Image (cartoon, rainbow, N blue to C red; front, side, top):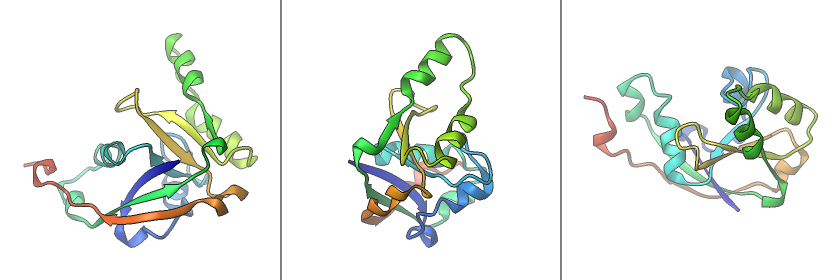
Length: 151
C-alpha cells in the first residue's frame, strides 16, 4: 500500500519520527516517535496546512513522499474512535498510541482524519522492527498554489 507524507524538504530523508517525538501531535505525546502519513497527497497537504500559524510557512520548501507499507501491518482504530464519538466521549488518542507504539505491538495504525472523517491517516511507529520494510518510493517537490496563501 502507498501512503503519503509531506514534510520540509530538508527532512525528507528522515523517517525517524523525531519531529513528532519532540513536539507531540494528536496521536502521540512528546517523547513518543511517530511518522504521520495519509492515504492521499491531498489529505497530507490539508493536514499540514491546518497546522500553519503564519503565511511564511507556505513559502518554505516541502516534499511529498510516497512510502510503501505492508497493509497487513496496519491496525485500524477507526471503529474504536467512532464508538467513542457516538457516545460523545473523547477518544484517548495519545494514550492508545503510547501503549501500541512503546510496546512495539504494531507497525502502524489507521485513524480517521479530524478534517475529513471519511478519509484516513496512517500513523507509523518508526521504532517498530517492521520499519525496515518501509521504503520511500518517490519524492517530489510540492508546488504550493498561491491561492492557499493567506492575504
